[in-house]
Image (tube, rainbow, N blue to C red; front, side, top):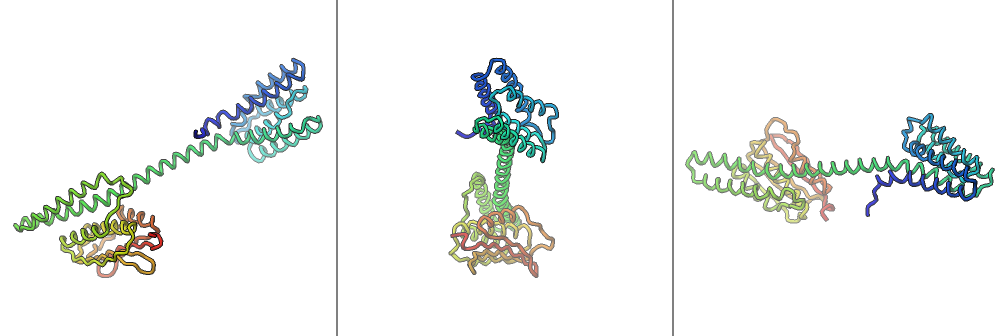
Length: 355
């Protein structure tokens, strides 16, 4: 059964207090006259709310009237001979909690030393010193419990919010990667089919069929957006990308080694999808090359195209999501412009991360 820290923080101080005060009253009743026992009971009843007030007080708000009252109730029964010496530890704890530094800790230590001296002067059982120390530190520890409980509650809430935020970002990334590529391909096929229809070219029917297939494939992928283990096939993605680029009139060359581990292949497949989508949306490319190599302990994917538009594009959701996928394997993503309108998307993953 899980520990309920809130309930523990709420009930531990009064239970500790009632238990020890009840013990002190019972010991007094067995050894001293009834009138002293009555005074001790009344002091205990007054002590209970005062101590609970002080161990829950703000350090910046000292209790000018109630603290002296607790001091009186701490030593009055003791002066009458009651079994009350250990209650000084409760007073020390209350001073430490309710007074701001440095006065709180200083007066707490002073009270414990004074109580120890009192025990020695009155020749009381040395076990009382253990009561003083235990009750003093116990009061401070139990006073801190509500703070710890509040911090834990806030941390749980922050962790839950962070998890929900990361899940939303992941779904947004997958939605962009899946729908962005699919809708780009549908738009391209639609434009090409329109041009061919105007020319009464029979190839328009082929493009319409491919458009329908792309739309259906995209639709079928939607229910799997929440699947964290969903992986793409790199070979299929490269073949699909090359066919899509060629249908758009872009020459595409492919150089692919077959030694890429599955988890790296998945990241590279998403990179190919993102790179080709950006080529079709943000360039007037005439040629493109896709290469997968292994060099100096690095798996590397390069998607290079020409015809990049002059205006600069800032990193969008797609590249940010690709960077997250790659970083999970200890890799990196770079996107750079070269001379003559060339654009290079590179993804590198250390070979040791894939083992």
